[in-house]
Amino acid sequence: MTQPTQSKAIPLYLQISETLIREIGSGLLEDGTRLPPERALAVRFETTVRTLRKALAELERKGLIERIQGSGNYVRSKDQVLSIYSMLRLELHEGGGLPTADFLSIDELKKPADLPDFGRKGWGTRFRRLRFLNKIPVAVEEIWLDGSAGQVEPAKVQDSMYRFYRLALDVWISRAEDRVGIGEVPDWAPAGFAKAPGTTTGYVERLSWAKEDRPVEFSRTWYDTDKALYVQRLT
Image 1 (spheres, rainbow, N blue to C red):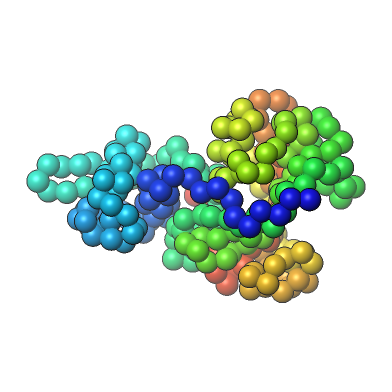
Image 2 (tube, rainbow, N blue to C red):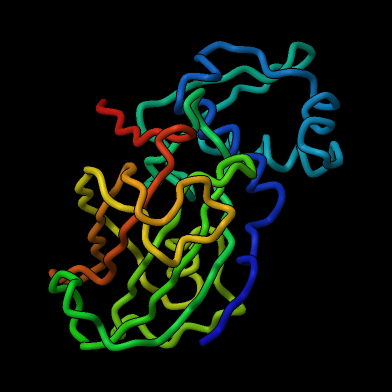
């Protein structure tokens, strides 16, 4: 069993751009809003103006801001945005929130009987982690990646699993199906998660597909309804 304490973070400029993308998507930053001055944003994100401008360039490339010389940066919201976390449906109650995670364990295991039929192998890699939004613990997750996806190197695992799959395993998740309900917090949930094991809380099961007809991943997430919401926007 491997027990890394923290996943590899995405580059800082992407963390900043993803934070702003999620704020735009949730409506915290409305279309036409003028962003604060670059120096003020750099202070907010505890970074340099140079790194901040790299993040803004990413947003401009995606058509989410318009940079007007001598005036500033203005939000240009879109119905759909290609984002590292575009498939993440959990948000803080006020909207948005940058996702990060601490991994509790990463193991190669035989699939237990309580999992749905997915993938092509009888074994897979199981990830258990505590997920945060803006450094607030909001969920515990158990993720199973089918053995057909390849060998997982724990040191390369990132906060964004789908990005990790693409970069390390050449597995591109193209679609997912979520089933939302309630469930009991598992007994392996760490003390950092506010909901005690056995507590009833929000629950999501997800099957994810790549190129093949059969799902390559199954996950289950128990989220703290006092801190986060499951949000699906229809456009």
